[in-house]
Image (cartoon, rainbow over all chains, first blue to last red; front, top):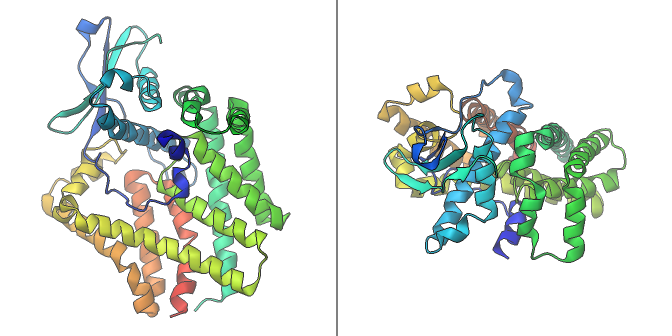
Length: 133
Length: 262
């Protein structure tokens, strides 16, 4: 029921801009031929060129903000699954994040993993997933 | 001073332009493979499991790939119709519904606070259209929009003032340097000195809190609003928050009107 209310969340304005707990984190991913030989962690989001007309229309930029919100929500929800992490992988938030990362894995590797980390520590580390769902 | 009629007309026009731009972006989002795959409706529909069957079936139809694309086109056409003054009484409730459905499609929000402010304006114009455009209704509409806009700055400032990370300037580093936001490399570099980050944090907090000056010293309103435009343009340049620019500026005629009531 909590997730159903989430669908209506924009009806209740939340003006607490940049007062969230998930500040100071970056999303990383790594991939490889198998779970034991995943490569180095690298940032999931690469820099996009910003042009003056993006002030009016910027679907790529908005898609990125949508993705950042998705990882932020994943991190927030993961805290309530601390006692049963095996269930978390089947939540909508997790599946969205998994798909977002899967789309960035180049052709060739068969396994990937992602994490959310501060400059000092990992705050969320995913399972290792197959590139083919 | 700004008349009620002029404030209402400007707010309405700016809001509809913001919605039109959003609908074009939404249509492009609906066509992106990454968006279609990650936010596939069959997956997100699990969030809607607690809703009545007929509503879930309606969502399944509206949020299929072609259904959502059609919704974004309809949203753009409704904004154009409203700008042209066609179907005035019906177009605003329909526009609000399309905006609300777009937010639901993405689990409550496409772009955070900008969706909330768009819905604040959308709901206000829908109610205004349904209950007749009387002089009293015009006043309530502008007062409501001005109140929400004022609260958006004030609450945001209060949250930051209460945060040690903001008072020390650490939050600027966390949000702009060590984050996934697409902050230009030259800006990340410029934010290296702690003193600059601290200054920026305090300038942000003071600007947001200073919205009360609109009502305490109404004469400063035009200058404050000009600063507000700069603030939102800077947020676009640094964080890429383009949707916030237009929908917040759409509230400015209402803020100017509200300030002139004091």
